[in-house]
Length: 461
Ligand SMILES: [Zn+2]
Image (tube, rainbow, N blue to C red; front, side):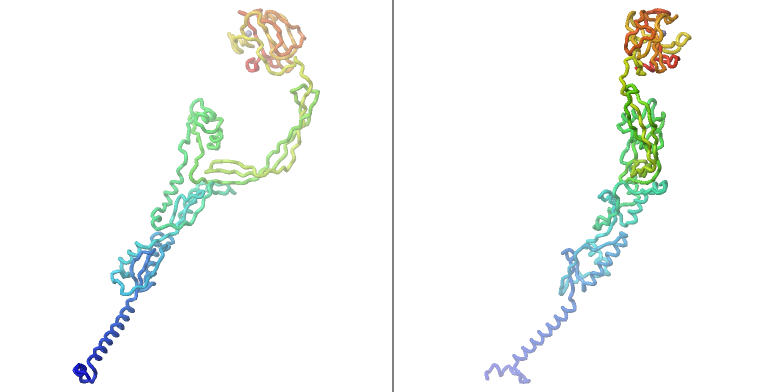
C-alpha cells in the first residue's frame, strides 16, 4: 500500500476517491431524469401558416380550434361560406419561448393568427355573356337583382309568354380572397346601374313640316327603328309637338319575351299567264279568277324590354289550297294610233292660263302660248272626231282616244287632219294660231273624261 491511499481512507472502509465518483454519478443521473421530465412536460408545436411562423401551441388541436373559431366568426361577419386557404405546418419544439405561446382565450393571440391566416369565401357573381358584372355574398341577392329587372315585364306579359334575357345571364359561384370581399356589390346599386340606358339621344319632338323619313335621315336613324321604338303610333300620321322615340331602350341586360301562337291566315294564289293574240301587247285579261286558300301559321313574337322586336314565322301549313289564277297576256302587235291612256304635251310653250276659275268663268283647259304656226301634236293616239270651226274655239280639232277620253285643240291657225282619220301620239294635227276668241297665238288644250273637262295637268306625262 502506498502512503497516499492510506491517507484517503475513511471510516466506511471505502476509498475517498470512489465515494466522489458515486456522488457525481448520482447527480448526473438525477439531472438527466429531471431534464427529461422537464422536457417531456413542455413539449410543444410551433405553427407555420404558409411557411411563416405564427406562434407556439401545446397541441395541434388547440390551433385548429382557434382557426375554426376565426373562420366561424368570419362566416358570421360576411354571411357566406368561408374557407381557410393557408397551408398549416406544425413543428415539434422543446423548451419553447413562453412569450410566443398562443392562447385561444387571449385577444392578442387570436388577432395574431387572424392577421396571418388567408381566408377565402364563396361569393355569387352575375355573369353576363361570360363576364362577371357584380358579386354578391349570397345567391339570393344576385337572383333578386335579376328578378327585379324582369318584374315589370312579367306583370304585363301575355299568357304563354316566356320571359328571359337577350344575353346569356347566369349566377356563378366564385371563391375569392377575404380582401376582395370588401368589394362586394350592393344589390340596389347594381340594379340602378343596370337600369341605366346605354344610349342617351332617345326622343324627338315633331316640328312643323316634319316627315318621318326626313327625321330619320336628319338624325341618322332608320325608319324601321323609329317604327319599332313607337309601337302603337302610325308614323305616317305624326303631328306637330308629338314626342317620338328615336331608339328602343337598351341596357347591359335586356329582357326578352317570346310568345308562340298559331293562327289562320289567307294563303295567296299564284298567277299563270297564257299568251293570246286576241289582245294587244301590254294588255291583260283575267281568264280564271284566283282564290285565296287558308294556311295555319305558327309564329313567334319576340319583344325586347317591352318593345316588339321581331316576328318569326316558324312554320306554315296549307289547310285549304288556293286556286291558281289564269291571266291572258296579249301578243298582237299594237297599232300606232291606239291610245296608251297617257297624254304627252301637245305643244311646246309657256302655260299662260291654267285650268279652273278665270274671270268669273271656268277655264276648261290650259293655254299654251307659242308662235303662230308652231306644230300641234296629238297628245295620244285615236281618231279625229272633229276638225273645223267652232265658235269661240276658232279652228278646233277633237280627238277621240277610244278609252273614255277626248282631247280638244283650239284657236288653230291651220288644221292638218280630217274627221275619221286615225292619228298616233306625236302626229302633227294642226298649227298654233289665234282664231276664235283669242288674244295672241296660243293653243287651248282640253282633256275630257266621258265628256267632262278635267285638269289636263293631272293627265299629262
Ligand atoms: Zn283657253
